Image: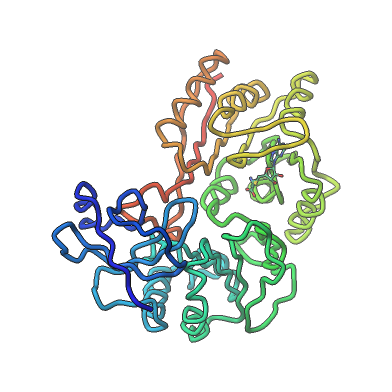
Length: 394
Ligand code: SAH
């Protein structure tokens, strides 16, 4: 394929020189009317100095990613092989950790190529493609991937399609589902062939570990937006007295029961409720219920039959409600994966909610992405996760 030379607008030249990885059409002077997904781009400065090699791939973040600052680099199997080698090298500690068998192996631009992530589930890989552009290199990447000695089988999600995949399997062996993976000694049931989500969000590994180690012992735990109850599992390992998991999706009952069972906990002894979290909080308040540990990890945006929730406008209200059902000296774990919020802004919203509630708190811990979710130094927006562990004074 012939390369397309694109000229970067003067005020963005410095950013690309210092390694900025994202291509955005507003940064380009001669953006063409038509451009094919996967098109290789040569970025140059106004005086035609070479800045970087990129590919075109339309996704929500922008229009493509820089993949090299070498002029003769292409998206070949050799290129992918070198990238993967480095990604594997950087995660040796996780590969050698017998208590953890699921983690992110390749994190897009953080590992040198935006638009693609690869997760490792006990030898089975899940590739996630974020544009048709990067997907056009699927075959070259797969050749490099299947060369890796640890690969048992490969699944993929085409995140650039609106519809969930129906054919997630790519090649190699097929595991038995649920595929049981380990994380810090806990077990999680996962599915690589069942819609966008696998049963566990790997980016919360450190938070689950801290819940197990430190924050759940002898506590009544409320896990809101609980999905498959992964945080509830961690709380039970940590010695929680009881857990209540609340999620509006019906699937959460079977999914959460399964996570409990594979860890030897009895689902009959825990509460797993299909409720709108906001309805549940009203109910809990009416019944004067108080929890010692309250966990909230809502989606950035959600619509149920009754309400529309968006982190951007509703997190403050959510916090106020959560505070009202948290026991004196209790703990709240407030999480969001909303990328357009800075940590600073997130803290401000939380502080305002406490002020409104006339309660005070200390931040015990702050978590962002774990190290396997590698962040590009020139693209800090890639570090979307923010988790605050708050201890209430009264
Ligand atoms: N905290 C979970 C992940 C949450 S994913 C974990 O660690 O695994 C977001 C979940 O929120 C989804 O399962 C979705 O069904 C649920 N959800 C969205 N809006 C909701 C609402 N208003 N009430 C209850 N659950 C909701």
